[in-house]
Length: 270
Length: 287
Image (cartoon, rainbow over all chains, first blue to last red; front, side):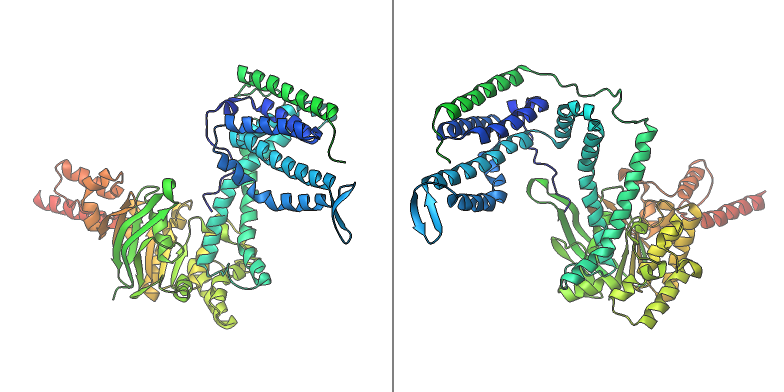
């Protein structure tokens, strides 16, 4: 259990790795929007090309991306199956109350391509950004929410602490499991109820040590005069580079292309 | 037949690129009733070794023979060996979980399937043995002090009456008095039940004082194995392994190097006292 990795960061030095995390995050948000704005094959093609271009730029093996779609393949199949029967218009195929129309087929294709595209593009983000940078970027993007009295800094701090302590948590889990196994605790065997019961000797010490750790960490942070985000300076100051500007300009072109295609060309899904 | 025989043990963590050999061809023999101290710097494989001895970690190759039987032979033996070879982890106080100390100590015996009457007897014996007062048994383990919790956790293993008792740095984080009492108790346990004891330790003084055999681990290998006198006579080798002689031995060696006619193979303070008295008495006779 000690070989667990948090996030999916793949070490690398590509242009995408070096990009400002704020730019990456906001471009991805817009991208998600435009994946759903694209409502004909030309617009969709444009987005697909842009995605392929982005994945190639990361210099991470395409298999890594394909592997990440493995988990959602069932969802893709299921939703496209359902969509297949939900098109209006003249049926091509009919059996009982089920009917498949041209719009239904288009629907199914669109929904599956959209989901797969989303997985790919979130891969581009998470493969090239460490979890720590990601929370950092989130904090800065959400900064305007402060006017609604949302404590953006505190939320980001909690997220990064949670991420930091996941490996520690697993290490602890491993240690306690071994200690209880040494006292003859049978963890694998038995029926469902027996198995849940067998977890009590592991869960209780785990909870207690987590609370202890949280207490210690809070004390340690207070000792270093941590008092929230007010007036805090940053070690890593993010600046926009040329690659960020290029990425933004490129995306703006792609997105406008998607809008134009969607408005000017006919929509095959009803 | 020896109670424990370890033959060419090899253990690896991880696979492929991240492979890390934690035990490399470790072999040794231990007789019933002996006390073995395992010393070595951090990351030398001590904790991994003790976890293979009770079957928690399965070695890549090699054998662990308990009374002549390979403990990895079948699953039944592997389950039962945990009661025969009791392992007390580092900082065992963090594994307490029951509502009362009594229930927590009885967790091990309970898993052995003993009768309530026998369990009660064993809990009482173990608690008395580690010096836990009777009124503490009905308290929650989380209301105890750190030292008391440590004792309760060790009692949890002793209540299983293991034939071999392994303790991974039992005195870490204890005050010197509690540490000494704990070690004295272990020696008493050996006398009473002929329990074989293995202690992982960082303290040369402790190792020199209580053990019959000492094993020095270095870079996943067994670097030295022998009686304390043998091991501590090779001070050059120990320095190479970034370990030290016990303080008292170093003092005796210094005395000798300054021209005092004194034995320098002394390992405990008591021995040193009688040797120094002997030398002084001899000096007085000469005058």
